[in-house]
Image (cartoon, rainbow, N blue to C red; front, side):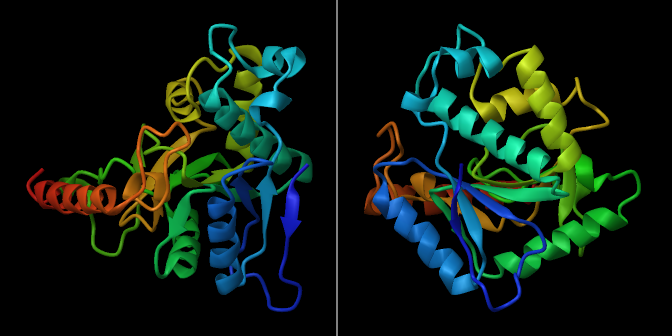
Length: 254
C-alpha cells in the first residue's frame, strides 16, 4: 500500500488526507521535492507507490483497463489515481487531496485550499462528496471573464485541467471506480474523467479553483517529464512564464 509520512505533534493544516502518486524506484528528485514541501508545511501525506508498470499484471489490467489502452506510463498513472480513489473509499474518507509527484504548491496553498472547501459547502446545488476540484493550471486556462465574481474561488467546468492537484469527494471516487470496472479506462486519466462527466451528472461535479494554487514541475521547467518530451531547464521555465503571462493577458478580453 502507500508509504506513510506523518507529522505527529502539530495539528494537520489541511482538513482532508493527502495522497501523492509516485514510483517505487527512480525520480528521487521528485520525492525529495514532495518531502521538503510537506515537511515545511507540516502536512502529513501518503505516497501511492503501487500501480507502477511492473505491478499491472493481466488481472489488474482486466479489472480497470480497456485492452486497447497500451501498458505505458499513461496507464500506470491512471492506475495510481484509481488506487488512490480506492484508498479513499476503503478508508471511508469524506474526500482527499490528490497530487502527482511533480507538483509545486504555490504560496498560501493551505489556507486557499481550505477556503475553497468552505466556499463549496456554501454553494447552492453543490455536493462536496461529488466534487472534483482542480487546483493547478497546466494549460493556463481560466474561467470565462464574464463568470468571474469578486471573492469567488470555484467555478463549474466540464474539463479537469489535468490531474496534478485536485480534491475528490467520496461519492465521486466511488462512482469513478464503478465506471472503471464496468466501462473500462481507455485513455489518460484526465481525459477519461472528462468523459465521465455527462455520465455521472449527480456524482461528479468538476470545479476550477481560480487563481490556481499549484503548478506541475514537468510543465514549468523544474522537472523533466516522465516521457522526456519536456526537459527541465531555463528555456522551459522561461517559455512557461511567457505563456502564462500571455494567456493571462488574453483572458482579460474573453
